[in-house]
Length: 138
Image (cartoon, rainbow, N blue to C red):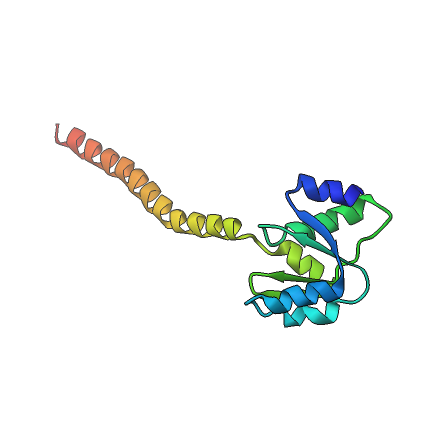
C-alpha cells in the first residue's frame, strides 16, 4: 500500500495486471514490445509515467525505506528495453527528455557566455589602455 501511495504522489500510475492480458495488449499495439515478453512471468505490476526514469527512481527509493523489496523485471523507455535487476541503476541514471534539453541549452549558452565575458573584460582592458595613452599625451 505504501508503494501505491508513493507512486501516486510521484505522478506514476500503478496497475497490477495479468501477464496474458498484458501480452495481448502489447501485441495489439503498433510498437514492438516483444523484448519484454520473457519478463512476463509471475506477479506483474505496471508502473506508467511520462518521465522514463521516474518508476525506476521510485523503486530504488522505496527499497531504501522498506524491508519488502519490489523486484524490477523489465522496462520499456523511449524504444529501449531494460531487462533484469542489473539494469535498474542504468535506468535510474537515465536522463529524462526535459533534462537532456536543459543540458543541450546549457551547452549552447556556455560558448556565448564565454564570448560575452571575454568581450566585456577585453573592453575594460582596452578602456584602461586608451585612458593610459591619453594621459601620456597630456
